[in-house]
Amino acid sequence: MYKEELIERQRELASIWKNMTRTEQQVFKEIVQGKTYKEASESIGLNPKAVDNALRRIKTKAVRRECTAARYDEFSFVYPS
Image (cartoon, rainbow, N blue to C red):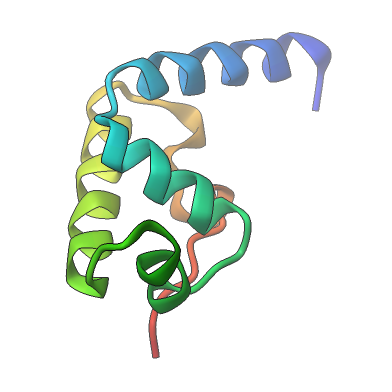
């Protein structure tokens, strides 16, 4: 990936981050670190469904911004089994 593309992707993610609620930011941090919904929910103090709902809102915000990093595989989401 070219340096310019990385810089653009960082800008896009920063823009999405600014529009996230505090809960969404907490959930995002936990999931990106590789935690499962259950682990993230226990760490944050939410139920797993609340984590799922926050991730859905994050994805919606990312897609609305037409962010190139909005592809689910690049967010490294860990889906519950």
